[in-house]
Amino acid sequence: PRSGIGVVDAAPKQLFLDGRWQDAAGGRTLPVDDPATGRELCQVADASPEDGRRALDAAVAAQESWAATAPRARSEILRRAYELIIERKEDLALLMTLEMGKPLAEARGEVGYAAEFFRWFSEEAVRIDGGMSRTPDGANRVLVMRQPVGPCMLITPWNFPLAMGTRKIGPAVAAGCTMVLKPAPQTPLSSLALAAIMTEAGLPPGVLNVVTTTDAAGVVEPLLRSGDVRKLSFTGSTQVGRILLSQCADTVVRTSMELGGNAPFLVFADADLDKAVDGAMIAKMRNMGEACTAANRFFVHRSVADAFATRLAERMGALTVGPGTQDGTDVGPLIDAAGRDKAADLVQDAVRRGAKAVLGGEAPDGAGYFYPPTVLTDVHPDSALMSTEIFGPVAAILTFDDEDEAVRAANDTEWGLVGYLFTENLDRALRVGEKLETGMVGVNTGLVSNPAAPFGGIKQSGLGREGGRVGIEEFLEYKYLAIPTG
Ligand code: ADP
Image (cartoon, rainbow, N blue to C red; front, side, top):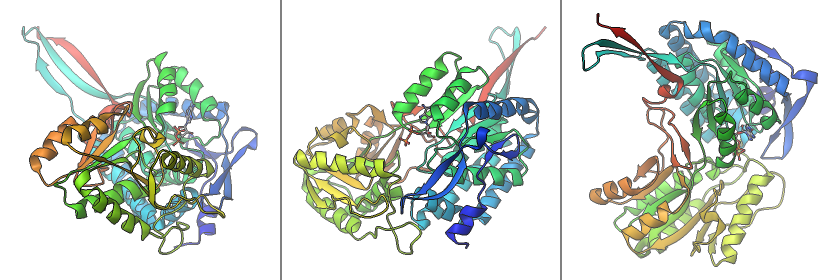
């Protein structure tokens, strides 16, 4: 493994346009900071709206020939990229930890997870099919084919810098779409490194263009309104998702939206508490709680609430907080000062309304955006964190008395990404699983993300699914030819 400085020095820092590394117009750059120290790691290109337009022009120009490539060729590019990512796991993990903060062990996990999207979609690329049938009156043949939707705009967040990219690029490549990727300004290095790997794997110029910028609104809006983008795949906040949906309305751009969550975590009286605490550790502490799938509201049956809270506080209290690059760190810093202040404010608000901090609750002094694992009991339902994504290592625990009450409370939110339920009773698991208004349900598990499963939410958590058999569908159109039987 290389040193942090070596990995940052070696990483690409320019825009990737039409297969070439290029400076932003006017040579403008933006700083990338290390959340563990608050210090600048390096500068990368800061694209203007004109640079964004050049990226889309390259994607538009490449679309026709890219759509005509053999599925096997696209499949093998993804397969090679998968292998290259695995080969370079250590460097990619270190780069990600430096720009994003997560502990190295988690960064390695994400690199593997990110690579799996490429392996999965390399297998999907050669399984795109259509059909042939006859109309009921026998007069026409119906020949159904699938075609790529066309040039795509892909917008990714900072919390999973590599996996949110591969989850979109994988199906787009498999389907034969070209794309402009705009990563979050906090974590551009992982996406730029990915572009270099895709090129090495044989991706032709113009198919993937990467634009890093501090002016997301200024760069993206004209592209969405231009009529040249045929598809937007966005992962980020519900608030920004709403803005982008309205920008897509005028030119009727197809969208896949992975937005916020407010996951309920239900522990029933008949739960196995070992499983529930293990599940909570993952659902709450994975990525320091900075995940749209993070358990945001714990509802625990009154009879087991004290035991659950005590055991969760013990486990969370045993975690080591520190820089992600340091051996033994379990919990890294949050992404920036705003992220840490948000968690701190939500905890203070809950405490003001009567919650008890049985663990943590005080942001430490010193450099870096650290916030300690925190467990709150006796949380009042009116607390702001009940209707706000905490995005930090804060577990808010409430109690319930019966199943209906628990389901009502769980569904009392505008979001519907994921829910978790813990019970040893199969009937209850199925019944509650069916009633939860979410796109995904973890049954006695705190982890639902998997490239082979359809990831996504209902209500204001989004539109469409990523991964699974349906992941590629989001990048394909249906076309049918009507052919008289004559
Ligand atoms: P978060 O709060 O997690 O940073 P955001 O929704 O703000 O989530 O950001 C997710 C992605 O959306 C990032 O790449 C960000 O730069 C981008 N983004 C933010 N605002 C806009 C906008 N107005 N238009 C296009 N992209 C945006």
